[in-house]
Length: 361
Image (cartoon, rainbow, N blue to C red; front, side, top):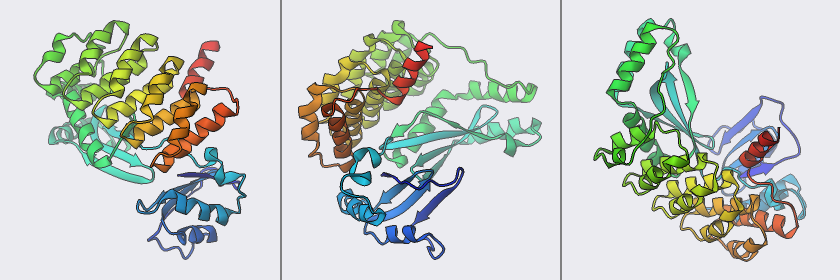
């Protein structure tokens, strides 16, 4: 939960505390926050504090005490949902450590928590072989951010490792070793590949994933992506969904609606993110329905979409969402209602606003 505060930290400064830390040298407000039942950790940067709570304690019990601590009145600060909403609710950031385009390990960031996952032996062997031509392999390593995922890190990590293993087969790794050894210009020349329906019939899911991973999606690929949405492997369905979001055309809407009904939460949430980025108002009725999704991550995305794009047709459903069992969903629904009923113009997602601004240049 993000709390906006008036006092800003100096640029580059951060504060990070856990309940079990030695707080003897911590600022008084930090000690007082940890006196509140349910506050498990906090991270402060610039003008906000991100609180981590004990899942056994509801936010409704925590926030009034936080509000009292910071001296906010009933009409300002924490009582304003815009000041305490988490704009990336449920998001797990994914990074791959690379050495000359060869993956080394996976890192997930969930708030201020970090999880790391190793790759199979063939990757470390490839790095060792390629590093013989490097003056300083440790300095050349870099973390490359990937698309975010949603769900439990202990499930996401192995899934990402599987996908990397599928995409970086033996021949590709051998080519990367050769490129790393032959010259300093070791960028991989990996042209886009035309994916056919027949390629998705391969019985080996890793081959299907590797083929799809080289697609540069266009409208012509909709039949292939539609077929991929029916694949038994969730990783393939998620990748196909992400590709649909890259095709900026209303023709993708029926396929994204299909993904919104997928059995995997990660696929449904990805579909919601894509619809938000595309910003088509035609998706409003579908996202109103999505407020009743079984997953809080997907319901939250639906409420956020309606905050960004929704209109008066969403008011009734948003009022119902104020009774959602999840606090974050209720907060986002409240934000959407406040904007719509207040007559504030819908601006779309940040990504959509950036895209529109670029088009106008």
